[in-house]
Structures are given as structure tokens and as C-alpha cells.
Amino acid sequence: MRIDERDLKAAATEVGLSDEQVAALWKRLQERPDTESHFEAAHVAYYFGALLVIGAMGWFMTNGWDAFTGGELFGISTAYAAAFFLAGWYLWRRRSFRIPAGLLITVAVCMTPLAVYGLERQFHLWPSLDPGSYTRFHPYIDASWVAMEVATVVAAGVALRFFPFPFLTAPAAYALWFMSMDLSALILGKNWSWRQECEITAAFGVAMLFLSWWIDRKTEQDYAFWGYLFGLLSFTGGLSCMGSGNQLAKLGYCLVHLALIVISLLLRRKAFLVFGGLGVFFYLCNEAYTYFRNSIAFPFVLTLIGIGIIAAGVLFKKNEAALQRKVAGWIPGHAA
Picture 1: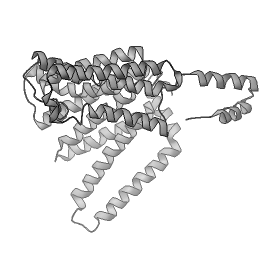
Picture 2: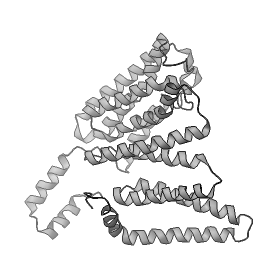
Picture 3: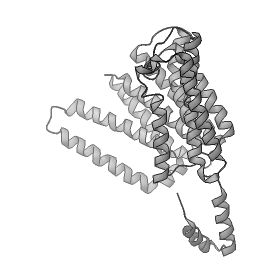
Picture 4: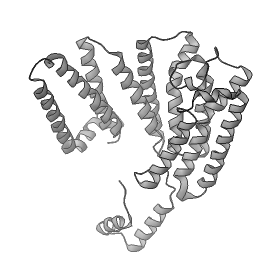
């Protein structure tokens, strides 16, 4: 919830605070560095620009970059990293620009995979076999990507030590997600089948969710958001892609996503509610399609499902606080 000075004064009058106390409180709030993003034009521009730079030097690189030697790739990436780091470091000292500063430092961290790749290519220091073009890093599993991913996690951790900016956890979470498959390929020396990849991804998602929950309990700023997001993407994505014609397995899929909705009440994290709700929705639609696809009743069944979901949302909103207190009471020592 965001408040302005007028909101604060109105609330303070109701609880009996003096004008001097309100002024001092507002001044103190204004002095706090803002590292939390909001949906406003400037913040959208900050993030969009940062993502364009990250994409340009990562997801959208073309095979034309194969013309560069490893040393040249290392030089280009480190020059980018240094420039963005210095700009971020300069802005970080100005409290009103902590968000663009943190994003610039995040961009610098995201240059790590390319820099490590350049060194590996220059000196032929692959953990396994030569993986080929850097453009294969994002779409393909390969044991030789592991060093790049480990270095990215380390770089993000070091940056977080000096610049407490929650978005820095995003490149670390992304690298850990890739590492879950590449590291297993390096250790066990095999290429995984599609189902095995799904199972590994789901297991990694569970591990990341537990790690994010632990971080969430230890920190005041929201460092857990990206861990929760990538954890849920990995876990629910892995489960959804496995596929099964077994009705018992499908029911288990639904129950797991219902459990995510319950967890959202406990953690007060809407991401769990969204992913849990989507999973239940997919299950219900799949069941409706399986049993009613050749029936004139199919549109009516889907309509009933939609109305049921809306009604469930209304009931949830009316009883949200009570449900949160009840669910929190199931875990000893958890504050409601």
C-alpha cells in the first residue's frame, strides 16, 4: 500500500498524533532509500531499458558474434560490466536514484556468463566438451555451461553484499535454474529425456521455494520474490509438462495446486495464489474436455467452472483475513 503526506496526516489525526510528530515521521519516511519498484512511468522505463540491455547481450545475441575470439568477447563483456557498474555505483550514492542504480548493477552482473564464456573459449577451459556458440546457452542443456552459471550466482551474491537491491536475486535465480539441469549433466554425464528434465526442473523448483522461504524469514526487504517466482515456474512448469493419462496423477496435480493456494494464505504471497489457481483451472478444463468434448454440454460446463471460480474468489475475498489467521495457526510459532 502506498500513501502520500495527506493520507498520513489524515490517519495521524485519527490516532491523536500532533502536527510536529506527523512532520517528523514524514521527513523520516522521505529519507529512507527507495529500492522497491512501483508501477509508474519512470520505474517501467528503468526496468524496460535494463531488460533490453540484458537481452541484447544474452537472449538476442546472434551467430554473428561467433566471429569474435574468446578474448574479444571477454573484453566486450567486461567493458560493458565496468561501465554499467560505475554508473550504478555513482547513482547509488544518491538516495532518490537507488532503483536505476540497482538495475545498472544488475546489468553488470548479467554480463558474467559472457565474460566467463570468453575466457573458456580463449583458453579452452571447458568443464566438459566445447558447447559451441554462446547463442546455445539459453535454449540447450550442456555440462559446459556450469562454470558460467556458478560465476553468475557468485557475482550476484557479491553485488548484493554491497548493494542491497532485491532485483539482483533475479540473475542468481535464473542461473540456478539452468544449473539444476547442467550440473546434473556434468556430474552424471548424460543427456536427459524430456520427462527427466521435467522431474529435475520440478525438484529444483521445490528446493528454490524452500530457500526463498528461508530468505523471506531472515530479511526485511523482499529478496525472496524472484526466488519464489522462478521456483514456482520451475515446480509447476515441470509438473505441467510431465503429462499423464492417469486420473490419480491428475487428481494429485490438482491437490498440489490447491496446496499452493493454502500456502499463499500462510505466506501472504499472491504468486502462490496465481500459480495454484492456474493449476486448478487447467485441471478442471482438462477434465471438462476429457468427458464433455463431444457433448453439446461442453460450453455450459466451462461456463459453470468459470462461475464457480468467480464465486470462490468472492468468498475468498470476504474471508481472506480469517482464513489467513486460521492457516497461520496450523504452524506453531508462526505469527498471523
